[in-house]
Image 1 (tube, rainbow, N blue to C red):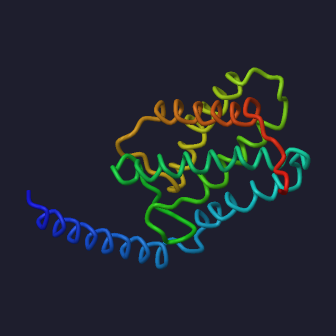
Image 2 (image 1 turned 135 degrees about the vertical axis):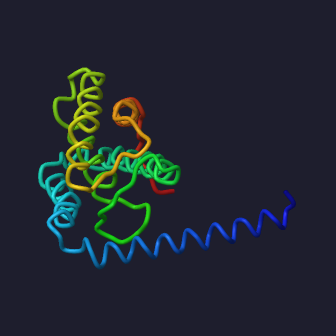
Length: 186
């Protein structure tokens, strides 16, 4: 394939992506908006962050939030790749954006990780990680699937278990093993 042919293929692919995104926006705006499933997705964005703001340890909130951001970035990257390759999809979204699912990966996952890091810090992190991975993968995702907020296509819950377990362990390492020095003005 020549360089110009590659550019032409990219243009065709972008046209198809734009057409697909338009279909997603249309479905969300005309079929899903304000359904009970849509409201659950809205609640999954608002409630976890509200709970965290109320019960977080204010002395550690910066460090915990940094761990939450780490989870958000990791899950955003892996989720985008998974959706792109057709491993799973998110039929009902709060915002009509093709690959973005704020409810689960940008709200529920990071807040649960931050709360697990904050409470009972002496519990073995591997136990917490396995619990987080198991609950998220074998209970959370099937429940989301039952109400059409998640659709597993070419994926196994076991893969999600491994990924979520690693997410928690990396966050734990980040919070408890990395040293943060105060930024001092020059």
